[in-house]
Length: 268
Image 1 (cartoon, one colour):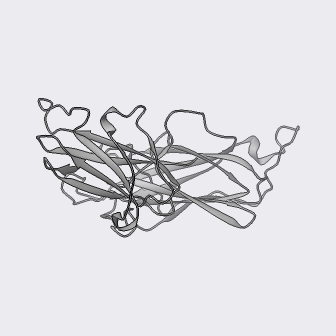
Image 2 (tube, helix red, strand yellow):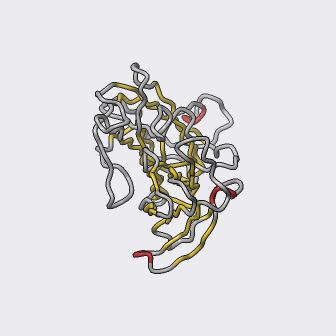
């Protein structure tokens, strides 16, 4: 299963840094608020949120983390860090990032863990975090536990890598029997641009061959197939999605059951 301490991150009742200062370039160090990083530290608690088929994201109560406005229109980077629960059993959370330019809001949703980073063009931003730790669900922690999430904002774009910002909506792998299939809903209003399908067997003695697992991009109601590929042999693994892709279908053509999941690539 995918639940681990590095998944999504969320903030609960906590101090919030809020600025009404104009963030602008300056030659005089110390006069510009962005000579330093704007930051917030939020106190979180593992919850029982168990997911929603309606929008492909777990339910939960969004808690305000970092807010900033009246910034110079520019590219900014938001980075997260986590002080995990003290019992060592991990957590799960995701962030809702609203970049704002000229009154227009662009929303991105990302899994949050120490080192999670996303960039966007903005003159204002607000960040909310949702805990989805699913305590009490088999395979997940059994009790509430406190943890902290830090968010920091600075001018500039994140480093160029082969991996986009990510969002995981299924916290456990999905088992597909031999000859079976399943579908994953593309998260709504999250900025999804690509998908990485993962696949494995329950035992190492049963390897997956390159064509055992097939994936397809589907429109609403599975009315049309937009693209088909074999994730096991895909390099580097991220498949760009068509704009009208609503579902990712995954089939298991091997002789044994397979464990699959989808990691969503987020623009930014």
